[in-house]
Length: 269
Image (cartoon, one colour):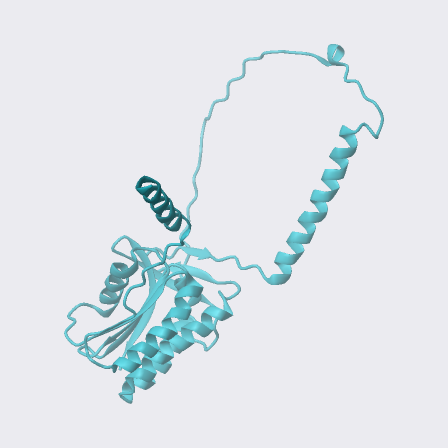
C-alpha cells in the first residue's frame, strides 16, 4: 500500500512539473542607486514596464547613478547587456546625476521600435522632467512613450545604419492588407493546384500511357568549364543624414559594444 501511494505521489509530481508552464524570471526594473524614487513610485514604474515586457518579449529598465565615471553610452550598453545578454529585446533609461546625462540604450527589436527620431522625442520629455527635478515624471515619460511607439509598430520604410561602417539594413514591414491579400492569393493558388492534381490522379482528363521505350535515352558526355577571369566591384554606401524632424519614421543608428549591437541616444541636462 505504501509503495502504491509513493508511486502515485511521484506520478502526480512528475505530471505537475511536465504540464506546468515555466515562469520567466524578470530582472529588477528600477535600479535606483541615486535615490530618486520612492517605493510607491518604483512600484508604479515596474507595473508600467511589465506591460511593455510582455509585448516585446523582453525587458525594459531604468537605472540611476551618482558615481559613474564611464561614458554614458558605454555604461548603459554594459548595464543592458548584463541584464538580458547581447542582441536580446530590451532597453534602458540611464539617469546619470553625477555627469548630468540622460541616455537610452536599445537592443533587439527595441532598436527598430525606438528609432532615432522617436528616441529624440522621448528625450525631449525626459529632459523636461529632469530639469524640473520631477524625476518620476521623467521616468514615466520614458515608459509611456515607449509603450505608445511599440503599439504604433515599426515605421514603414524603417532601416538600421551601422555607425562605424555606414552599412544600411532595411526592415520590411507588411501592412494588414498586404498580409490578407497574400493569404487569400495563396489559398486560391493552392486550391487550383489541388483540384488539378486530384483530377489528373483520378484520370478524369482521359487515359494516358507514357511511351517509355520510345522516349528512353541515356547519354553521358564529358563537360569541363574553366574560369578565366573574375571581377569584383565594391562601393561604400554613404550614411544618410540624421532625421531631426518630429516624425516617428526614419532609421535607427546602431553601434557594436561588447559583442552586441545597440541603438540609442542621449543628451545633457
